[in-house]
Length: 405
Image 1: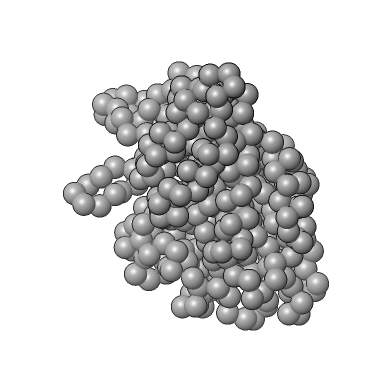
Image 2 (image 1 turned 90 degrees about the vertical axis):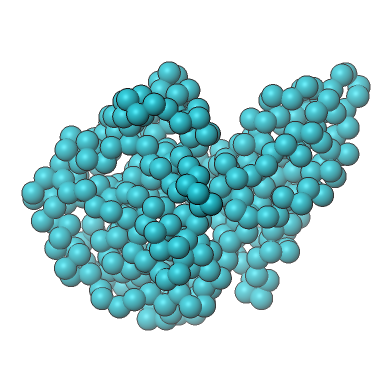
């Protein structure tokens, strides 16, 4: 993904990202190098890694994230444990890439529990950024969803701008073509990522909720399988497509998404041997539907990138490839691991914080105005001074988001 022109000769700046999703199985990390300033910077994934959550922590965290609040003392201990694991990931990546901790910023994303306050929902990030900053000496930037909610938004989706920076290198020409990025996690989302031109206002970025992902996979494991020879594979697939909530956002908010109709449609009708095949078929059909029905067709996309590690991703990529004229790639094809998206988004949101440009697309998040997302927890005095210098010299213009939908 090289640019067609040298945008900047500035030295690279380093951003780390660490992320924990609702599945609560790993703490994922990534190192991103940025060259240039603001929306005209080029970004590159340099390294990645993860640590597994010990089972007792994972079980407690998953229960907490899915609506079972912990007593204050247990919640505080859980936050401390998560911060320690995030610290391990950050320190490993610093050592692996041989980075000077005085000249790095870290973005933390999640784990996030959602709590209802009155008629509204508010994000509650589990963790302790001050402990990560103290242990590593690196300035930590987090609470991206909280800042969006404070501006009247719904807390997401916040992946749109980071994906635009990652998949659309800055170009002087207008020859670039869009990319469709599909993320597989608890839910599946599709983003229409337009090309990025130097000196031109940000073009429209589109998002389409595709389907429940690992949430549905977990749900199917809990239902009664069909007796041998009694599977209703095609009927279940047809019934799932007719469920109204399938196309009602916010599908990216798993705690608000009702899986009961999906479980009821499959209960006792799909045998154990066909469960994975059913999911793959459903997911690939929904991706194709989103591309044809929900995302723009006026600007021909160049490729589809499948991010994540769903069941049989290579098989799904091949099936989608057979039904479209687009180049279909997976994270593996790009030289990345399957856990790249969450920490990459966190790192690029930290980059946007220090570069002082809004990272929420208001027509997607619903915020009343575009805001610079995040809050900073200073690291060592030298590291904090470095971050202050980045803030002081950041480009001052506001990013136009009026046409982003």
